[in-house]
Picture 1 (tube, one colour):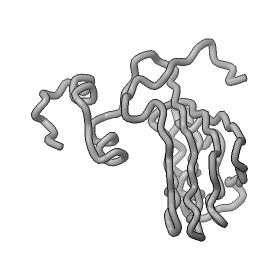
Picture 2 (spheres, rainbow, N blue to C red; picture 1 turned 60 degrees about the vertical axis):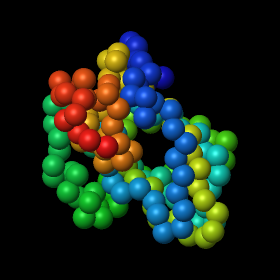
Picture 3 (tube, helix red, strand yellow; picture 1 turned 30 degrees about the vertical axis):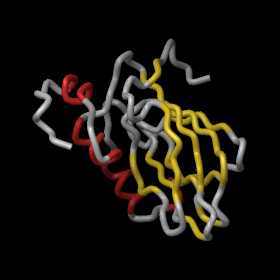
Picture 4 (cartoon, rainbow, N blue to C red; picture 1 turned 60 degrees about the horizontal axis):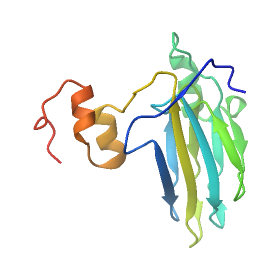
Length: 155
């Protein structure tokens, strides 16, 4: 289905399988994933908002496509697709090359999504900087893979 010869579970212990939750006023800003592939399972939606917006294959391994990214960030709707996921829906997504976001939520019910992450190369973990941005901490494996000492980033 992904037209890839193989792929591997994301080896990052903070990000390989997560339950993502968001509450009223929150969503997720435009971003590219660190991992190549993501499988999401919608568990619970908010009353409104929480739409999954994406621009498929906006960049490639050899072209960052800054012009296209800028157009999406400036609101060019011709490059954006919207997907409304219902609880129980399973999505397989190439987030490393497709710019995407979740629109802000409204209402008191939180949005829950299970996220399973995969990579093209075995053993991939996030960089210490990106991991700290996303999860507020790093583990020894993040430092080791970046060639840093254990005391380089203090939690």
